[in-house]
Image (cartoon, rainbow, N blue to C red; front, side, top):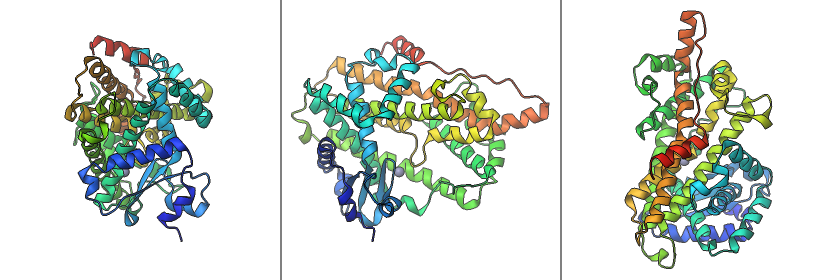
Length: 419
Ligand SMILES: [Zn+2]
């Protein structure tokens, strides 16, 4: 009964999102990867209107490929959040002039406002943007962000790997030991992944060194996972990496296709980097705030102060903290940072404009600096089993402190780089 066509009844009615969806679909056609597909259908769905059976069959919190039907489902809320991020960041020309990047508290206040009333917040942002000529740029930015996320799903379609054929989501009520092992798997994967992109934590080399005593302790925990889960996790990660590579390839092809951009005032690669930055940063701080709120006895006063201690001293918190690394995909900040780097390398900004080049380079660097917290979380997560072993041997817990770089500190570092 549940067919992809039936989603049409619940597609978004938002005129801007519809127009952006069409723009993205047109842009996608300039990619040879997309041209090579047998068919491609995209549905931007308002799941709040959809009946339970449809939700059960097609729900995704962001985007999902439906292989047999050559379709991609996009959750309207995901696209709306991306638009909010792009328009909000678009109000300031530079990262140094962006009010909510000045301090974590301002960033978290921004996240809370967006989370509480997304539709109203977006409506206000849209009226601001129509007062200047940036409207076409904002829509193109959103379309390019969508091209990247759809390109990822195109990768799954090309691989013919349906997400539903394997899953890393543990069944509700899985034993705590299994949840701990699954979280350990996620931390270890991300440490390796971050390391492969050049994100390391000084002094934590053993966390990503296979065969080290730190990883041996983690491996002992992983050995308690049911075998099919371990296999699924490997398959999931490989498929995700391949799909992200495909998303980047599609985006680069679209950006380098001359036709669609002839009338745009701002070079297309600049629009793409702005979009990826906005979506990656907002998504990171939203997930990060969500984690702090879960770990804090007073969610409204959540802060990063005791994060690592909370994570290591409570096994449930250890599991919860792994949630920032994504359930359906790898975490967005990493995906965005990798994509931004590749766009800057493979797409020329033409006509050459030093001011725009500086602007996008700053965004890319800041994205990389912001990875610091994720690297600390992943490194600690991958090392926790070993540290607890050591504590047991010693008979006393080691005092373990880890400082998180503040947003103001990151911006200062960025200034120091002269970017
Ligand atoms: Zn995927």
